[in-house]
Image 1: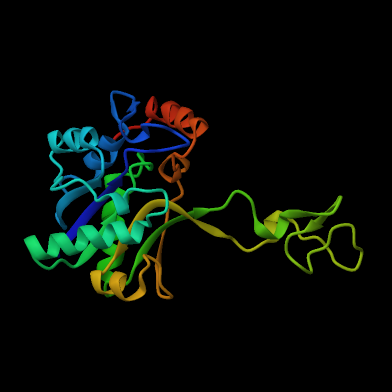
Image 2: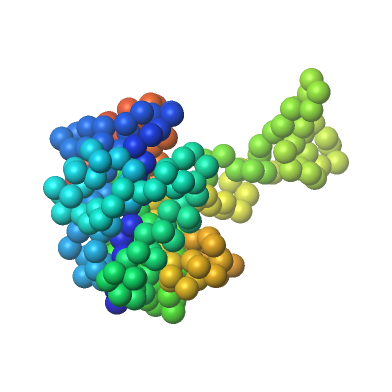
Length: 237
């Protein structure tokens, strides 16, 4: 099987400037993801899509393929990950041949392990190349969430009581588990990506990630400080 590992890394970041090459432990953030994707038999190549030459140079030195700088229209805040992935996919299949899967690995999830990547690829194979998505249990259940209407708190979801004797408020331990996309793993067949214009379809297979550090998605300074703590304790798997 030929799977293209795609790492997307813009140079600009409003919330956390320069985050993709900011030092985390002894190496730039993006290198954590490159190293995790190396030496996996089904990964035919690791391609980095970036608009920044400094990011490109660091990734080339680490052994990743950086064949071009991303065009301006795919480098803004409005550019979608699907558009960026399709741009890379079309180039790769034109230049290097047809592949079986596109594996999107965001550099802001530095602690996803090689074992987790291999597990996700196994799910992809065993389920006839249906999409696989990394998910984690949410810390805040939607059935316990509140909203503000006027001056008062109301249940975010209807028919879930708040100060209403006719509607019993459920205990958190009695609620069904709810999962969120943690941003660490997206794997899809190229035809499905082009057809659905999404990494998620109605037949997506869950890759449940239980480790809090693997599920960490760095978006803010607080997230990065948490990552620095994990970087001091993380071990190779």
